[in-house]
Image 1 (spheres, rainbow, N blue to C red):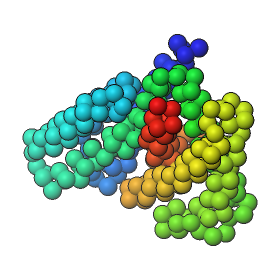
Image 2 (cartoon, one colour):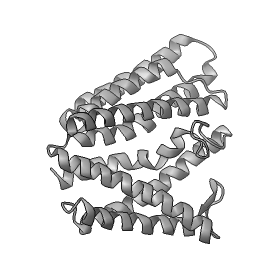
Image 3 (cartoon, one colour):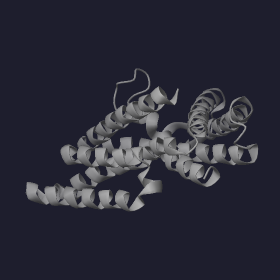
Image 4 (tube, rainbow, N blue to C red):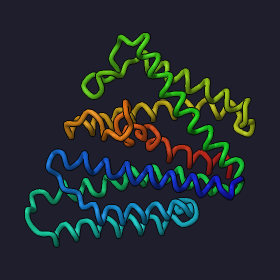
Length: 254
């Protein structure tokens, strides 16, 4: 079934990152910053294609060269665009940061599929999404039911320590479930610390995206998902965890 699973996964990942990147640049435009979306998308697509062929593992020099050329191109085009030069630093920074935040981080998830054992790759990705969704769900309901102590009131007033604990417990529960359900190759000694680390990174990613929205004066990244805001609001914890799951896979399943 991998003949249709992987192309579908890559297509969905590409669409999600494309929309997420667009939302990021729309956020940047709110405080009158003007990212160069044309060169930004070209750089983002180049990075994504590299991840499709596992550039971090098979050709890291090519990935680094792509980043170098992208940064030089963004700066050069901002210079050639001309005045107002007082906006150049913010515009170039937003262009580059968008591609790095969404595609450089998120692209690692696409590269996981390049593991030699395709079945293990599929199971690891299923584990990844199961833990992420479990953490988000556990945090939401625990925070809604028991939440009293604010986690980061200046960044995200709705987040509570009780919700964070609920998310952590749900993450660990999902890791145990995955081990006994479909992923015995991932021992509990590895699965539980991995799930805990994913939960912590997920919280950091969530708060970071909330801070970016606050900086742009926006409540949500967009309004394409009724009741959930934008796609970037759904990707925040996933993006911070994508490099973790990739490099874990490289070490644990060499």
